[in-house]
Image (cartoon, rainbow, N blue to C red; front, side):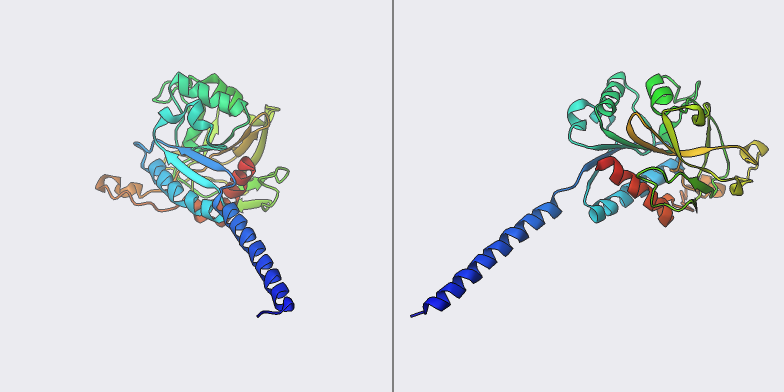
Amino acid sequence: MASSQQLKISAVTLFVFCLFCQWHLRANAQIGTPKFKVIAFYTAREDKAHISFVHEANAWFPLMAAKYHFQYDSTKNWNNMNPEFLSHYQVVVFLDTRPDKPSQREAFQKYMENGGGWMGFHFSAFALTPSDFNQDWNWYHESFLGSGQYVSNIWRPSSAILDVDRNFPATKYMPNTFKTSPNEWYRWEHDLRKNPDIQILCSIDSASFPLGTGPKLNEIRHSGYYPVVWTNKKYKMIYFNMGHNDMDYEHKYDNTDKTLSYTFSSPIEEKLVVDALLWLGK
């Protein structure tokens, strides 16, 4: 027969074991529950550089989701841009284009006005009248992004040195300057420095000039101020002009579709996007 001392030791051991099991279950539950949920919308049509970026992003974001404990979903069904569907996500990402239907646009605007988070890349801000993407959404291009219409771009996609405003949660751990992966950099209709709602987080450093290789002279920039990452202080949002990979354009008619550079091949650029996403989802 066991002594009273042995029974006490067994009881204590069982108690400690039960506490450990409860802690282990809670820890696993916390690991299994995402901190926030992200839904990325994309079109991936026509422009091979944009398609390349979409494929890259849809492979890269799930890796970051596993590392930083958030959920990443993606869809090319823009009809999911509705209040019920969006209610399940804390962050919306536009990988290449924007919604076109009035009901989709209304749903997105209300989502943002109600505190949702948004991250947009490159072509998601594009608007040019006349084109296949007319500027026919004033709230988005004028009030939300503040940039107005697209004006021009450099060519060929080139790396740039960016100046960083570190006075912001998503950039405070960034270096003062960093070199990007090659990109097609846009110029905009409006000077964002004059918009009190806009905080420019990254802009092209003068050390980048001349930026672009042409062959057309107007595709090379020699001076000027060009914002490439910014936020609107009225919303929880960040726009990145990055998102146009360099392709093997010289052999484009051979249907090789070879990608020569990747946006997320730059560790510093990766860090900027991850820190921005964690800020949006917190």
